[in-house]
Image (cartoon, rainbow, N blue to C red; front, top):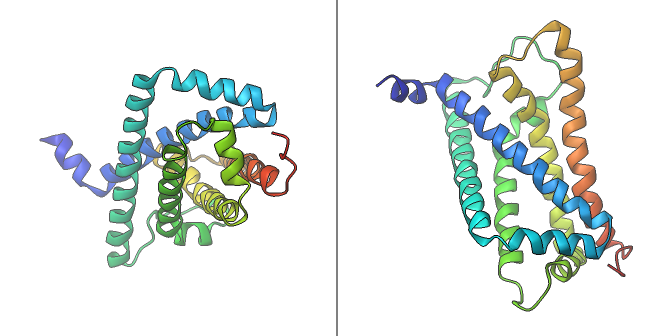
Length: 215
């Protein structure tokens, strides 16, 4: 069948990578919006968490869907990396680079695996905490731990590096590549990763430094 041949091809795999990457980026945006309530107050963040977990079926279905998308994205990413390594080419061959991203492009599989490790640690830490502990207290306890917080900072740095190339690769696959827009795209490949890095790392530093001791 045509769709089997399409998804078996390199172009098909890259298309799935781009779509799954976009879905993960949208999830990251929603997650960032929820986590940003930490900057407002403990009560606002706890209210957000309580409202979210008051719909367990939606949480389970959504979490399962994101996990499957994440699994597909990682599997195809590693497969494309290995195939292109054997062919002696980079994962995405671009004739016109908008930004200099050689480090980001060369480390994509490694930053991807770092993100995977972070997700596993993150889920384990929050899913298997004390049953009677409020999520706000769990956040404060875990991120207030120096080495745990340091691991988060390293993971968020890897995420930013991954996004700096992945965002441009996604747009390229979708055909967004025009001299009129390349300047803006080049800026976005820096702004988008930096935005997430500042937001998420800021939360970690908020607790690591003791500024959030009254949270």
